[in-house]
Image (cartoon, rainbow, N blue to C red):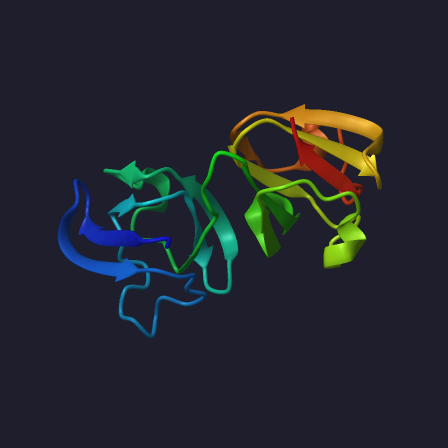
Amino acid sequence: MPKITLYALINFQGGQLTLTSACPDLRPVGFNNAAGSLSATEPWVLYSERDYQGDTLVAPLHVFDLGAINDQVSSLRPIGSGPRCIALFQHSHYRGRMVVLGEEISNLKAIDFNDQVTSVVVVGGTWALFSDANYSGKTVKLSPGNYIDSAAVGLGNDVLSSLRPI
């Protein structure tokens, strides 16, 4: 189960809020624009605006100082974890719909996500991404990392149709 603890101050100090699921708006829980550091069981995406909008930070497990987005986190969601884990996002900078996968998929139409991916986070394993269904077409291999725009890695935006761990 994903878990994140937000702290009001840097170095894991001050008031805290612990979450175990995505939170599209931190206002109702009284922690909007109040996080200075965090500790998590898996990577999370932090957003400066509610509903997963605005500036983003893909946060690793422990961040003692949120730096540029200190006191600016308004929504957040877990990415997932595992030895083979990839998160696909509909828009650049990890915005929009998110799908987390741990196994190959020969056609993203099966999950209504064909030709819609613009940013990617590879949490575990190396993945081959294909522009066409059934593992064909233009191919890009991605290692663990954060990719804010799929065009920047040579695949293009909104062209991903299949993928598999390699």
